[in-house]
Image 1 (cartoon, rainbow, N blue to C red):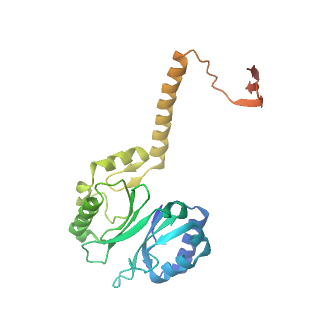
Image 2 (tube, helix red, strand yellow):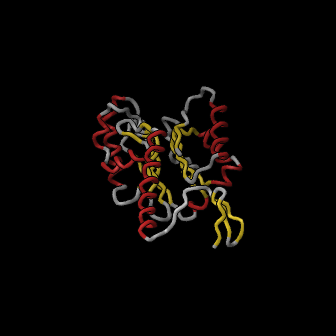
Image 3 (cartoon, helix red, strand yellow):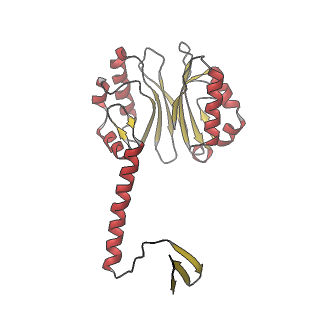
Length: 232
C-alpha cells in the first residue's frame, strides 16, 4: 500500500490519526508513505501498534526529510520481512528536495519509495528521476510505489518500461496509472476459467467423474453432493 499523506496543516492531526488507524486495522507487509513531516514521523514512530507490526525505515535519523521542504519518505516493513531487509537513500537530481528510499528485501527485491518532482513544468526533471530510478534498479525485481506526480497526457509516459504493460492485467492502465477494480475482477475470472478448463480436460481425459456441486463431508468414507450420498 502507498499514501502521500499531504504535508498541509489542514486537519493534519485528524488525517494522521485516521491513517494510523488504517495502518493498524488493515496491515500490509510493505507500506510506503510520502510527504511525512517531522511531527508526523514522530507520531508514527511512537505508536505502539505500529512498532509492534513494522520496522520503520527512514525514521531513525529522519534522513529522508528535506530541510527546505520539511517532509520526506518513510517505508514500513513488516517484521517478518524486515529481518533480512536493508535500506538506503538515493538522492535524485531535484529542485524540491526529492529522494528515493530503497529497501532491499531478503530475496533481492527492491522496494522503491518514490516521490517525483511535482508541477507540470518540471517534466524534464521527472524524466531524469525516472531514468535514474530505472538505471539503479535495472537488475533487480522491483516494487515501485509512491507519488509520481504526472498525468495521462504528460510526456513522461513515453519513457516508462514496457514491463509496466503487464500491470494492465491487474487492473492498472497507462497512461495515468489509473486502477479499475472491475478490470482486475474480470481478468481474474477469465484466468480462473482458463485454468479450470485445462484441469477439467486433464480429468476428463483420464476418466475422472467430476461433480460440479457443493459437497458435505460426513465421515472418513462418506460425503454428500447436494442430496446424493457418495461412499468410498
